[in-house]
Image (cartoon, rainbow, N blue to C red; front, side, top):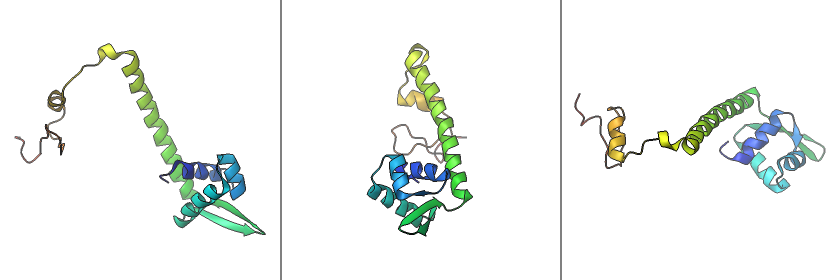
Length: 129
């Protein structure tokens, strides 16, 4: 599910069973590319195929696949809304933002934070109570 094309195919299949050709047309991908993505989804047991004559009709493997896809979409929409709000603040109200160096930022953070690999790391084992 890490590939955006596969997510689009899952979204289309959530609407109903489709052939590779139908999915390719609706997703604006080549049939070969669509088929390759469907084989990956099938190998992951996220989709199933029903053969009829010369065509394969793909569908989601079960309701659980749709539920996972729906949860990812909802979470993404919520995160995007939060990012859009923060970006809007950054682009429109920059005067209210305070510039700080790494050491100042670390001083403002909770003391139980461990940031490995930074100059201003504080290991939980070395901090005082």
